[in-house]
Length: 389
Picture (tube, helix red, strand yellow):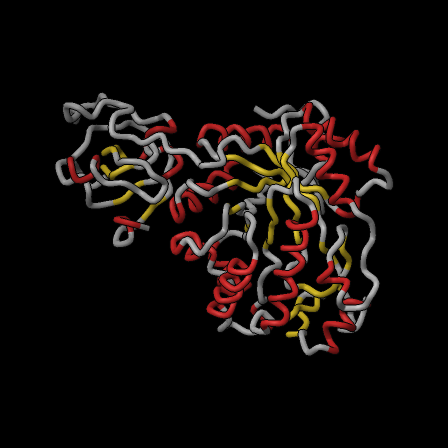
């Protein structure tokens, strides 16, 4: 967390602001913003640190989010010359600030390319410029892969990826192949159902069962080479494909072991070393859940720059305050540079209210970070009047 590691970060409300001590204004947080001495009530979205504003009282902290608004420069305590509102603040943005994306669920795939073309036209009209179609789930694939075919089993459903790439090129929408199941072999009560699970089980690839899913072993190089091979096949066989994506199922649940963080890091490095194209990673949040629940320390992956092109943390919250709190935490942990934010619109459970989703989208745009929405039906069926900025 750069210079902030020895200080406590607190979460507060709005109020009045002051000026700056030099130690504060010259310091920079992981989110890329310089500090500004303000009262604790004044720090928007709660990025403040104690101990950097000794010229003021105990209730004045070094705030790293004045650029959000809410920090005033006049108060009874005065201000420091040269630190008026806006000065000393880096308005940093993500490299992918313009990304407006949506995931495409395999459960809703149309039966023809013409129908998919209609989807893409609708999404383009809503402002979508990238999609992540699901190509790997429950032992089935939605693209041609010689790596999968080498297993000698049935699992190919239809070539949705070809449709998506072709229609994406026509519509001006970037397409990334989303390998949803990652290290999961199947959702089943048996390790040998469906056919892929039988093949994985017979090869000694299985690690065990957790939460109704059978997981492959991240410590088995054959498993990793199989997954990397499929990812590379997608990139090689579909020249218009922009990249590939893994998500929170590239993991090892804690039920299978609580000492597998290094195993997962090594697994990520091995796959990244074998896949020549751009690889996206969409982790679960908060970080504590990712590490303790799934053995994935993705924050360290960002800091060590192990090779992922972007990170799309799934900040799936159904109200704006909870979303803002988690977004603050993520930006403080890893900065913005490689972020594309994952938001939940619909899926299992009640959909996120339109008003709440609009606030979340607005916050992302204010922050200068791109975003991806789970999932495409949000635009085509649920909120048909939703337009992205």
